[in-house]
Image (cartoon, rainbow, N blue to C red; front, side, top):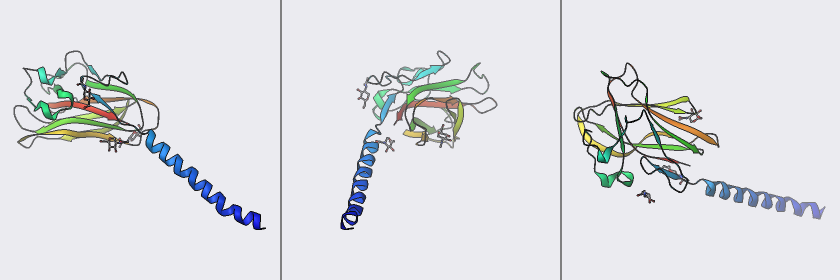
Amino acid sequence: MLHSQSRGPLRFVTLFTILFFVAIASAASLVNITVDDTFGNSQENLQITYQPAGAWSPGEDCTSCAAHLDTTQVHNGTWHDTTYLADNPPSSPLTATLAFDGVAIYVYCIVTRASTNPFGNCDMTFYLDDVEVGRFLLPPNGDPTYHYSYPVYVNASIPSGQHTFMLVNGRSDGQTALALLDYIIFS
Ligand SMILES: *[C@@H]1O[C@H](CO)[C@@H](O)[C@H](O)[C@H]1NC(C)=O
Ligand SMILES: *[C@@H]1O[C@H](CO)[C@@H](O)[C@H](O)[C@H]1NC(C)=O
Ligand SMILES: *[C@@H]1O[C@H](CO)[C@@H](O)[C@H](O)[C@H]1NC(C)=O
């Protein structure tokens, strides 16, 4: 009798200790990996790919691009610039794609609400494993301020495993739309 009574609390303490270490282990295993628009992530050997060829420009070297950013405020001094032209739409979608192994993704752009030079309309659609999961819309209002490290898509409830994320800029029948992609973090 005495024996089994003393085992009750002991079992409880043991269970509690195990749960505590499981919680620590799962928190510690969530590591954030940053993938730059241009340099990717060299440790993980990851790169963002852009389609169609030539439709996205490295923004920091782009003389024909209207957006001229403060390179000290962008990740690694680089960004990718593309514009969906409503009056001259591309023959295939303007996409940025990243394959990653994780449970969360955070996509950062530079956004502006300028009405001219550049026309800062945001109209992006996001896909995970070819399924549409979100959209980011922000029409211009004349404010030319650039907002750096702006999270345009966040998803912290992705099933663990290998996934493909795709950003599509603009859409057919939509307005002209600008995308300035800076970096992607995944966990
Ligand atoms: C990963 O980065 C996101 C966005 O900055 C942040 O909200 C999250 O807490 C970070 N997670 C870890 C495990 O550091
Ligand atoms: C990009 O920035 C990250 C984090 O700030 C840094 O670790 C990495 O070395 C940089 N890569 C390049 C090519 O500058
Ligand atoms: C996150 O990703 C999951 C799996 O792809 C999807 O079912 C869910 O709708 C997404 N949530 C958000 C907020 O995008």
